[in-house]
Each structure stands twice: as C-alpha cells, then as structure tokens.
Image (tube, rainbow, N blue to C red; front, side, top):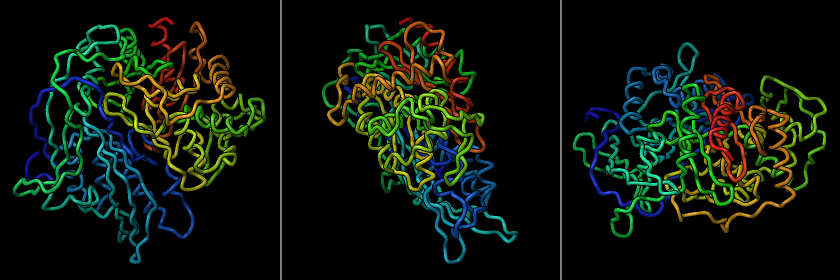
Length: 546
C-alpha cells in the first residue's frame, strides 16, 4: 500500500518449501458476541444487555452496529457511524485490504461509562490473515453523544488498533513458497486444478511450522523502519529439504464429492464442509465455497447453533440431569434477559427431551440451564471432545472456544450453541465423531501425524454414546434432518440454525454420521440447517456409497 496509507503494505520474500511433517496450529483465541462473518447472536445479551443504570442503550446500539458493519465488510455504513466518515472509510479499507484480512471477528466486552458521559466499549479483534493465521488483539471503541442527542463513534486511529497512529502503521510481510506436491491416502496426486478447494490447503502443508510464513510489523511511516513485530506466523522446519510428495489423509473420491456438493447445492453462498474418519480423526475431505482464499472449513469461527446441542445433551446425560423420555416443555418463547424463540417460533407442548432434540427446541434446552454449572458446558467440551485444546492438524486451524458465561443470558445462549461459543466444520465433524464413538481422536490431514486418542480427554460412557446415537438417528427419521431420511444405512444427524446479527440471515448447519465417517457443513446465511446444509450433505453421501 502507499506510504500515506493508515494501515499496511504487504511485502514478499522467497524461500523453498520443506514438505515434511505437521504444522503447528495457529488458533484464534478471540470469540464473537454479536458481530462477525461467522458471528454469534443478536444484540440484547452480554455486554449489550439492556436496562439498569449503565450506558445509554442508544450508544451501545451504535457500537454494536459499527462493529457489525466493520466485521461484515460494510465499510461505508461503519464509517457513517463515526464522527469522521471519510477518513474512517479510508482507514478501515486500507487496514483490512493492506493486511489481507478476511472476515474480521470482533468481540465486545463490558462497556464503560466515563465521568464526562462518554461511553467506551472494549473489544477483541480477531483478524484472519489469508493463508497465514489469525492476528488477535484488543482495542477500545469510544462513543460520544452528539448535539442532536444521537451517538457516534468518536473516530481516532487508535480504535482500529492501539498502536496505529499518524506516525506508525502496519506492514504485512510474507515469505512466498510454492505448494508442495501432495497425494491422497492412496497415492492419488492432489492439485488445486483438479480439486479447487485444496488451493489454500495445499499451500499450508509442510514441516513443523514450515507452512506459509509471515509477520505483521509496526513500522515508521516516514522511514519504513520496523519498530516491533505484532504477530508472527509459521516457523522454520527442521530437517533437510525433501522432494517426496506430502502424503495426506485425504481421499480423492470424498474430496471430489465434497467440492461438487458445495458447487451444486450451496446456492452460491459462502459455505464449508469437512468429512473425517470416526475411528481415528483422519480428514477425508475439506472443501470451501468459494474455493479460493480463506479456509473457513478449518480456520473459520462460527457459532455452531443447535449442532452444539450434542455437547449440551452430553453434559446433561453424563450427570443424569435428564432422561430421553422426560417431559421438557417446548414453548414458543422463553425470556432469560432477552427473549429466545425456536425456529419459525414453533412449539411442542408436553414434549419429551427426545422430541426437543429431534425438533431442535431452543426453549426446552435453555430451560435446563440450571442443571449445569456455569463452567460445566466448557469443561465437558474440553474433557470429552477436545474442544479448545491445541490441535496439531497439519495445517493452521482454529480449535474452538467455550468461555464461561458472563451472565445468565449468555449461559442460556451457550446451551444452544450461541453466545460466545465458537466452532467450525472441522470442530463439529470431530464433535460428531466423538459423540457417536465415545472417543476423541485429534483430527489430522497429514498421514502419520494423528489418529490416537489424546491423553487429555476422557472416553464417554457407553450408555451416553448409545443415547446420543439414538437421538441423532431419530433426528433423521422423525426430526429436522429428514432431508437425509432416504439415504440407505444408519444415518444420524443434527441440524443447526445460528443467528449472526440483525443485518444478516442465520447460518445453516448440519452434521451427520454414516458408517465410519462424520461430516459437518455450514452455509453462511443459509437461513435453516435442513434447508441449506442438508442438501449439501445429502449430495455428498449420495455420491460416495457407504
């Protein structure tokens, strides 16, 4: 970018690829509350909860809208919410474009009310840098009341990043490397020409940390001198260069079917899919739509919505807090700080817990929140499913986050995979595999790097596994995943609908298992899981016989 930009420039150096071993996962640790391309759920919870003697709700609404617009790429709208629209639009555009940032994730924290009436909303920025990893930092959003009584973001460079200033900016430096030759599990050559979704994936295959490398530097605007390194991605590989192809765990048939399923059924929307082996976590297919750019299937950050009810159900069943035939009423609405509702405001009076699961009843699950401790959902996700641990997949990955809820409203949201719970198709395919087998196997894409149960997880009891399989099977035969009911064999599934923001349609999810394969698919703004992700998974499982 030009030296006068307020953001960054990208520079390149060349190096030779060393195609050996696995890549240390570059995992984002921030999570999204109400904003972000793969965001969480609408305003009215957590830091944006209404009521009390806190900051003016109008100020918080403006902060929420600014962050949502920034994260969603609606930069003119975001800039219009500031005291300096022209400068704000230029800076935000230069910052994201100059640093190759795609789909920012912005996490709001508790707002603060100043003695002078100003409002400050701290936030965590999670910036995915294409093909490298995620840069995470914290900043603050200042808001000031205007003479007409409205609120605007009080524009200053430091709100984008605390070190961005009139004298200092950021520069992205990459070390360019060609993708190594790679094969699938049976020795079939893999290329981005034959398998377009593997373009960003193959570029990440390499030795221990030796995938794409780069850094975000803080530099002097006038001299270009580096003052500090803000983030570094990738490490040097150990061992000699090797011309042998990288052998992956991918299966050419599954990969081809996955790419065709997204191309034919995702309706042109952003979408991602992962299929993996249940018995050892080996990844069979990873596909994205669009096929180039950000690898959202493995590095994306999304609220998993009702697919997370597999984990919530596990937590409840482990402690005997509910039985499948227990009556857990499913009303249209339930208010816990904010009003929660079911998809299409459905209701099932006198429903059993089995019915609540198969019809994905949000209000029923939320009503059971008192059965779990505040930290219990995250503890179960970590101990039994490995979510939030550091995974070594073989390419950069985001490995999930289940923070302890900050209030009762956020706890209610967490029960249905909203709030600050974050995952992606890789994580949810792994969760599905663990739920139906009872054992977590760290996912891997490089042959020989995984396949074992980690020592930091605990196997699920057999009776819990049996109950989860029963629930998922019933969801296909009698519930929201009926789109898969005509497939042969025992197919189990769970749908999910995840709210993103008031400005965007819901994301659609579907996870499924058949034989020794678990699949997870998300379609951004797909509205419902069964209606958007369902046809994608159906196409995939039809194309690859059991």
